[in-house]
Image 1 (cartoon, rainbow, N blue to C red):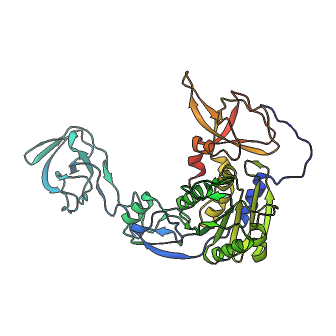
Image 2: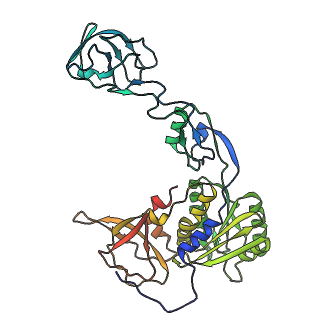
Image 3: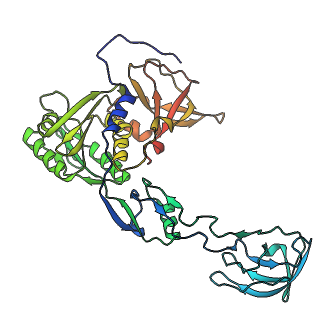
Length: 415
């Protein structure tokens, strides 16, 4: 593995600096709402949950067996009279020395219980049970509050609520939760060359793929997506679409249309309603990224090429949206893993590169990373094939056998 230097050109913005700069623009959404437990999944918690009760709420049996109160707790065997039967949902009466209670998992242990003995370690005959071993105090007794203490925080602010969180809230009797209102994101796609799938292509036209993956990615994040469809590629239509979107959405996202070309109307329209910064980032694919304001809405302009737009979204725009939703944004660069390259990358770029890759098992059982042969920014088949990205520092070559930093998509696309 070697690192190459390049001739001096117009400086590009460092990837990490650009990401930090974008995240610094994110303000947490303040709108909240109350939702019932059955509607809470996927929402972001805005008020920490404190348990109004201890769980379990009483000492209970961890096994089917016998709750015992031996005459001599330290004896090597015990013979006790079975005085009662206690099923889950019922309370027994206090045990006296020399007594036992037939008990079932989850049932409250009666007062006076020294321990619970699993039924497979006992011999029962009539109303007498025999235990031929030493029993330790509180064996197989689940103590009150050993799972959740009274008034303890059980779910913290900023948690994306999933099935285990919903179950936890239900287990302490909560019925409603205070959550963030969904972040409203409008997507605007312009370009007279773009047509919807299912429409016959005319000369010079291509199908609009960015709309479909972007909409799905936003919905997976829990955003409310505002999608007016294709916007005509004129200054008037672009301004009208941006005005309408900014009145409805917290964030407006576009793909393409923010360069200096005569047909790129988005940049001028945004500047007429707010402001825009166009950053040239030292990353490949995905060098151009725009951030600004349209009226009171955040504006993010992604590159137009599908792969560039996708990579820039997952590495830049998605963390921004998560920060706006109040979710903790960890460094995605740190969630990857070290793996062995099974390919050569002899021609490095002056930018930080993100190669589409996936693990491949070799004949000897080892696992190496392989890359899609065409890493062009318009090759969406490389993203569909890949399982993740290899983070390659600027100017670095790779030889088969080198250790590289691999970031799986299931880490990048999770929250």
